[in-house]
Image (cartoon, rainbow, N blue to C red):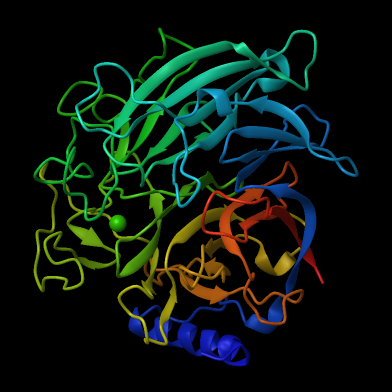
Length: 445
Ligand SMILES: [Ca+2]
């Protein structure tokens, strides 16, 4: 496809999606001309910036973490300042494609007073882990230094949870505190493909309730040792690991709580070959993987040929929950005009002030339309009007700052600051090499 055809193609695609998914038109559907954000460079020289959160101490500063180990403090008009360096605690990363590293960071809801923060990172395989496994994911608590509030005390690490990972990929590792004060943890299905192979039980990790892989977890970091299980976690009293909050996930790369509305939990789930999806995660929900992908059935033995019929409930008898939207993946639908990307990057419901037309819409991205070349795309999804079903409509966010329409790099992550303004984190490479990683702010043009 010629670059000049990109946007008209995307508009046609959106119309196609509306019909393909029978989403009823609603007044709130975004027209591409309504809003044209630009990307303003905030900081560069990262390898692969994997997230941005506000430093909730009232300073207006942000924290950005680089997948290869470092967390930096970003202040307006100042170069990034090293806040925490976990490189020495990581498994040795590939100097090529690698999904391991520092993947998630969250500050305690009372951070301003207690200085506590939480990380999810990929450590070397621990002693006693199953033979042939790849590494051990660690969720740890740290504290800022007593003497310097802009540095983390590495010696303060308190290990909360370790999860052995059979393969290098599908880690998720994203973290966030919910409005209930509990820590939510995204965990991928273990890796490889199709949720099969070493370390994947016969029905897949996503559907197996005695593993933490392929799940959303929820823990109480303020009680218990090293943590407590919230009273209403769905498997607190048995039939599954008590940490599980929701299941049937493949690789929830990017999740967030809506800071407005009903504070719903939105999460991407990266698909196999056919569909990329966005979900609203609810307690005890089963999101289908690896029996479903997007809105259709999935057969791990034949991943590009969805069966006509499949079970409508999981092994525990609970019905699967469909995503709020799904789009076709170029991997299977190479020449299909409805294909929009190859790997979804989760974002945020927009609640900032810069874009009145984006209020209440879910802003997210696809990593890239191509594997070998960075062509990330931003999207805005709109909730159906009342009575309009559960499927959200989808529109590309045309970038006024980028004449080609797409980001021109791989979109690794979306971030949000204290005012609800959004950031786009990119890497010019699909590998952990070079220093081409950048943090952009989404600004009106
Ligand atoms: Ca799903």
